[in-house]
Image 1 (cartoon, rainbow, N blue to C red):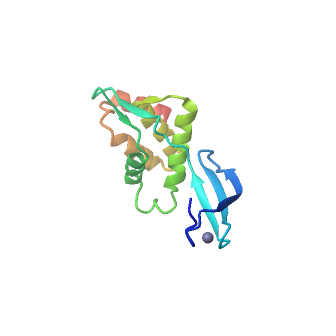
Image 2 (cartoon, rainbow, N blue to C red):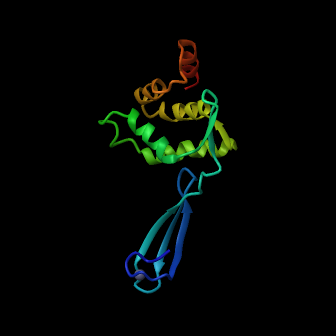
Image 3 (cartoon, protein in one colour):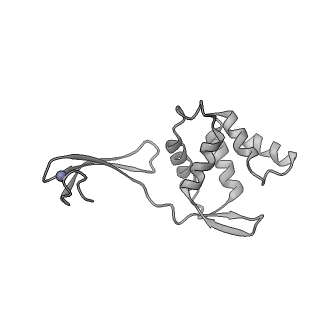
Length: 148
Ligand SMILES: [Zn+2]
């Protein structure tokens, strides 16, 4: 990468470590020309992951931005400032990575999201669950609530 201050390409990594959730690598780099210090976060791409929608008989590539949008929607405006959405998504991705599944059924993704949301905001978890048409009957809802 280029130095954002002077455009020089000679950036040297001076320090690096994994973030708390383990899905990102934090690096401190130093410009060899102007001595500016730059911090970067590198995360492995999730492009090996697809989400399967059996109800529609389709598989879609996983999208972090789609997931982020669906999660922001279920938080109240008052909760949003204190909810660390980015960290929450990291936790969800970490759970997917450790499950070693490359084609994840949508219902499994919903379960992972619910399990992650529930300790943070029960209201958000319930709203997330309700926003999915996959939960079409009371029995299914009860089943999901039990695991969440
Ligand atoms: Zn520089």
